[in-house]
Image 1 (cartoon, rainbow, N blue to C red):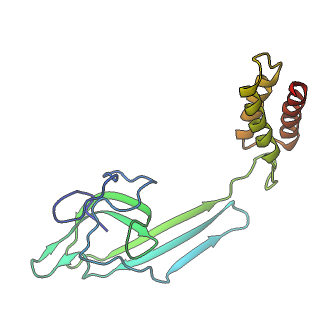
Image 2: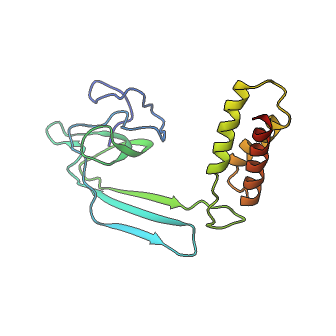
Image 3: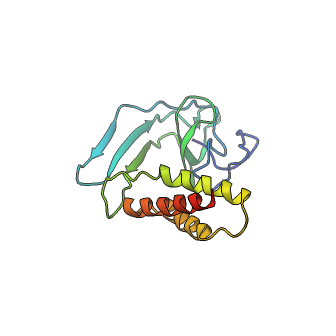
Length: 192
């Protein structure tokens, strides 16, 4: 846990701001006085075959003695938390920020992380694998030819645009991929 405020009391983190980002590999201001806590075994996996996701729920209890200095009778300001993959280093897997609170000696902190893994598939062809590798190779070959040949390239630029668009489309059907591949390869044969 951290304060989410850079100060002399905590270690600041270059590249991390007070707004959580998927790219954060550490907290903005992680407290080093208390080591990272290992996750307990109170985890739950929610797996419903009728839903396109699996959810992992991680619950963790933070000891009452953590983030409170008994010598000064001062609580730590907490405004961010991280889920790390190791005890040390820039291994933050997930980071959240929240309105800060100051930990008092009686406050119990119970942390819950919900990680949802979603299975993305084509809405028209559920779980059907679309092989786009031949289309990608055709686009690469055509780009090389464009650099070598005359600007009078017939329909090749149009077919390339169509192929690139379909390559990026998650819902394209295999027939369309095959058509784009054939169109590009036919134009390349004419140019050879």
